[in-house]
Each structure stands twice: as C-alpha cells, then as structure tokens.
Picture 1 (cartoon, rainbow, N blue to C red):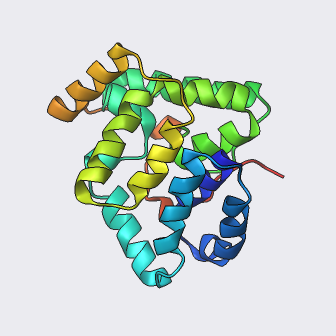
Picture 2 (cartoon, one colour):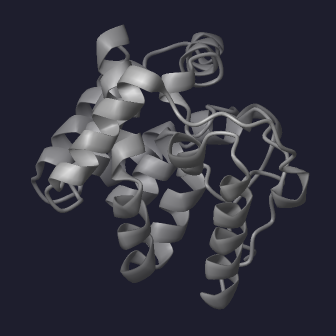
Length: 205
C-alpha cells in the first residue's frame, strides 16, 4: 500500500488524482506506524488543501524543469548514452515476463510507473528500485535543497529500501557533482519522454 500511495502522489495531479485525495488520505492513515507513513501524512497535510491549479503548476516546476529531480530512473545512470536504450528494453521485458501489461506511452523507467509495478510485484519491483538508489538519492537531495514537500515522498520510498552500500553513495556524489553521462541518441523505440500530464499508465485491468 505504501508503494501504491507513493505511485499516486508522485504522478501529475490530474483530475483523477485530485478527486482521489480523500481516499488516499484515508489509506495513508490506516497504514501501520512507520517513517514512511509519517512522511506521507506530512506531505498530505499541505497537498490536500492546495488548489488543483497550484498543485499542477508546482508539480511541473518541480519535475519537468529541473534535471536533478528527474523521475526517469535510467537517466541518472546512463544519461543520453546508447546503453540507456538497452536498459529501457530490459525493463519492458521484465514487465512482460511478470505479466504486467503496460498501456502507456511513458518510458518504462518513470518512477511512478515503477512504483505501481512494485506495488503489484514487490518481489521484483523493490530490488529494481534499489538498483537505482543512487539516482533516487540525487532526486531526494535536489528536492530537499529546493524546499519541495515532494522530498518527503522520496524519503518515504528510501526508507523501504536496504541501507545503501558505499558504492551507491559514491555514485550519488558523482552524479550530484557531474551529472549523468551525455550522448545524443534517439530513444523513440522505448516510448517518448513526454510530460506526465499527457500520459496514462498502469496495468490493463
């Protein structure tokens, strides 16, 4: 349930998400006591009372225009290198083998989508997320430095993962200092990288 709530709250706050705000809050309050529950409730304290237009503009400003708070996990490891295309293809194959049918034009490494998959298959999804921990740490730091309440959601996610290894911390420090690798290539076969406001995603029901 924590993974599902994080998936919803890290989505673009369209009409569907906004309308589900009360239900999301009820589900969060029913979670067992934990650091993740506390952080989600703290986020909801501000988010629920925010006018939808303001919530949407803040989301776009936070995640669409700041590279270090990008929600595409493979970007941090591979940047625009060709290896990223192979990583995206591997993700699509993982979803297919798990019986998780995508109905989206989103890239398969989009964090809310990965979280939705992890909520359905934590045995596969949590190790997948942990493998990209260094990039998620970069997002957390960028959000915290900008004072964004979305940092609480990333902190909640990180609290579910095993303690980071030194190599994860070193990779995160490198990414903060130098950014991801750069190489201009086309990623069209793996889905257009379009703003989340214009896509739907999830599993076919």
